[in-house]
Length: 110
Image 1 (spheres, rainbow, N blue to C red):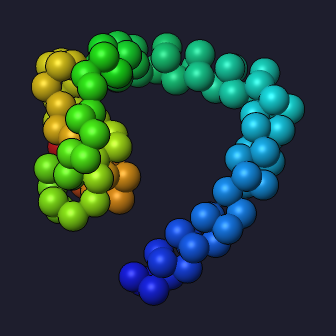
Image 2: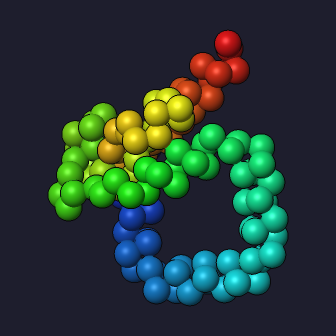
């Protein structure tokens, strides 16, 4: 698994410009669909969107390590409780995915 992560990072670094160009083209081509999905999501989860919007104002200091693994750089903000929009932990992308998955499993059990 760790070996795959390194290969993916290496591939991305070598092809970064091409990948970003393709991504931008896809977003432009599918802008209407993306906007429609975003609006549906906003209506379905208004509390989540309000919390995320407010949390964007919280700056992630340069060089800040993930508050979960203390290995990778923190690039995202994670809400433990959307009713407390300014209470976030600063996490790396991989830890954020794990935290969100655990949160979803917990909500499905309750």
